[in-house]
Length: 209
Image (tube, rainbow, N blue to C red; front, side, top):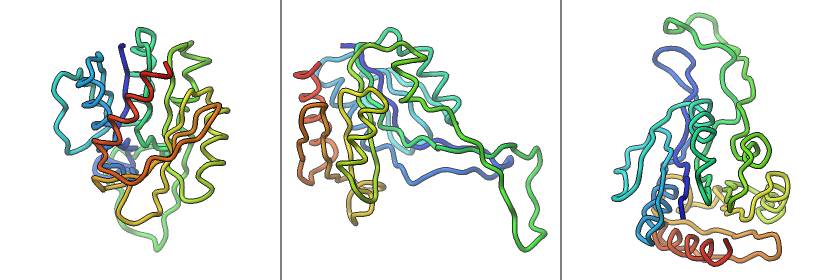
């Protein structure tokens, strides 16, 4: 299969030296790309900024902002058989980015934020994607119900959900524990190394797609 995988955080500029971002390391997305390539799939990895090495045998497209990632996905998803959205894309960005560094002056600073485009939510409609669609849900509560709602709203075939409030797993960690939410069932994968989990997710996706 031809598989598009997104990974890492996005960076939304405030000024030439500052940006809004999140704690995503990109490790899960890169592990999925490595696992898919290992299993013989043709992989395009669209990644926000990380400190990770690109897996062997993977085509790599670096991006920075949510808008960059949206454009990259829109350009390439049409030739894919499956897509896995593991990136932690910023929901909002500053309404304007200052041309010069914002100087410290007043005691408070108010930022106006505007919503970023919904990349996963655009796949079925705007992009016309008909392949196997996998989304990720990083939650801090009500894991199964939030994942189920996301699966139905975005038209996904699978949501991989993890509780990022749990210490030692998820963000910045080499380990994770996930809930796989399909339209017809839910399966829990116990805590494990992200590379082991990635191989299991790719194998499950192969059987379902």
